[in-house]
Amino acid sequence: MILKKIYNKILHKNYRNFPKIKKFYTNFFNSRTAWIDELSLRMENKNFEMDGKYSFSPHSPITNPYKVLDWLIDRLQPFFEYFDKKNVSSILEIGCGYGVSTWIIQDKFKEATGLDISKNAIDTANKLFPEINFVQSDVSEYFKKNPNKKFDVILSCYGPPINLEEIMKHCNYFVRVGYRPKKINGAIFKMNEKYQGLQLAFSTTVVSEEFKKNQIYKFYFKYYLSPFFFRNFVDSITKKFIPL
Ligand SMILES: C[S@@+](CC[C@H](N)C(=O)[O-])C[C@H]1O[C@@H](n2cnc3c(N)ncnc32)[C@H](O)[C@@H]1O
Image 1 (tube, rainbow, N blue to C red):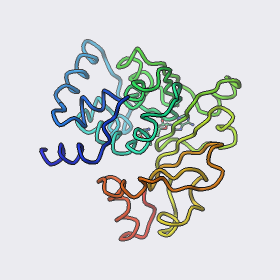
Image 2 (cartoon, helix red, strand yellow; image 1 turned 90 degrees about the vertical axis):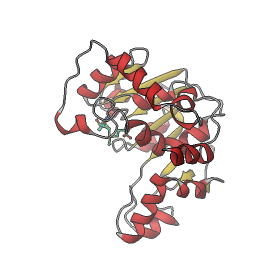
Image 3 (cartoon, rainbow, N blue to C red; image 1 turned 30 degrees about the vertical axis):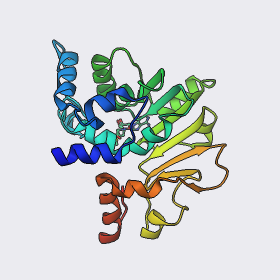
């Protein structure tokens, strides 16, 4: 536990605009208890439906309250660090699941919308985080119904397949976390299995008009030191398969 605290302090930037991450996670005196207190207050006197296996996924705060922060913050670290100081204020999170990540993201993005196709996930998200705007919809249906909607950022962390051209009509930056390269060299050096853009980390890309060519972010290799990315890296070599 103490090692994890030291690790978090060293490896994460001192976020200016994500106070929830600081409070629960990266400050040396961060508190998991504070997170559990917050969550239990939000759950008080509410009933939550279970939805088969999906309810037990690691990003569910109901069944995995201790794991969910690690799960989301590990995966989204490059995203948080990159956008911490950027001048952006609206975001759509595609495949937001139970809404914990949208709730964290809302610290920085004053206009945050979480979108997911799962009724169970969105019902739960609405009960837990009523201050956030959640939409239950398939992503392409959503844009058909809202052809003029535009966000500064659209984020998809292990979300559904999307039509990139379509998505770029609705945002300035599209951030994709969790691409799945088929080959080892595709995972490590070649860019042909990633979208073109700013390669923030091993499996995080920012697509934008700003990046007409592939660019490797200056901290790209730093993320190999984090447990989540390091595990992916090792897996890609030892198992010769698709690192997530
Ligand atoms: C693998 S989960 C990822 C959840 C979370 N973002 C994470 O990183 O842990 C994928 C999410 O995408 C949602 N999803 C799948 N197809 C979708 C679609 N067509 N439109 C919107 N959301 C979709 C699922 O319901 C699920 O919550």
